[in-house]
Image 1: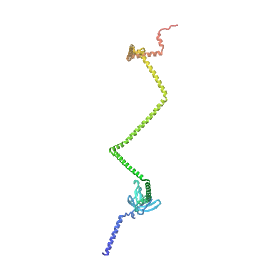
Image 2: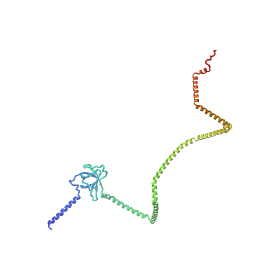
Image 3: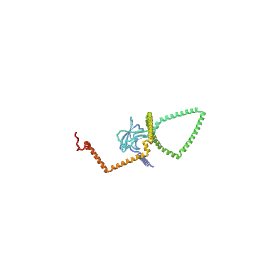
Image 4: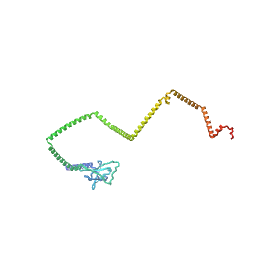
Length: 371
């Protein structure tokens, strides 16, 4: 093989290697920092930014939207300037979190922390956004180093205390105490066995399906029973209140009676005495009525007198009937009315001129004697 062919083959290999390398670079690069790509800048202020440097990737919900331009040390934290692709944006409801991996690679992730209804797009040139730093697992391990050392020391001290306690127990406990402890353990085993038998009996009772159903029904009825009991208690409370009020009213009635007891007793005695006298009078009246010599007695016992009185009453009734017939007769009523009119006219004339009575008695043509 001549040198020309060797050079040609070496050139082909070099060209192929360069071509594959270029393809791999194109496939693995996003060219976000290209000078020909339009971008705008926003700023984020965080308490600390370990691992953050220029070209650190910036993602929003896991999607690359830009890279870090600069990182400045401030009195109140680290001010990060981010180049954001023009077609990407960040909203006001999103917060930037600085995260680092186990190998120290950092990434800035924008994630939402609130509702996106009223969120607005962050405009370039505005005030810095507030972000936060999420500690990495290495930070937790570093923070745990001091606590872990102190914990190990505390465990060592606790082990020493346990050893001292064991020595003291061995010193205090002798052969008799060991036997007593053995008996105590045996008694404890017996007690545990009895407890197991008791629990199995309880399981036999509680495990019955019918008993479970009855228990559930009873528990379901318990609220209604409580409500009924509450209603009964309310009724009893009302009844007790009414009884108390009645007792108070009765006390108000009996107190005046107690205060006026002698007077009331005297009034009752007087009333009983008057009633006794009245009954005596009624007895005397009944005796006189039953006496045949009295007027009422004769009227009751004498048949002839009774018949005469009955006849008189019959005649009076007949007379009243005749009078009613006369009054109901139109001709008779007209005559009676004429008579009454004549009497009214007569009395009127007499009242106006009483001398008519004298003139009616003395004839007009009679001459008076001359003395």
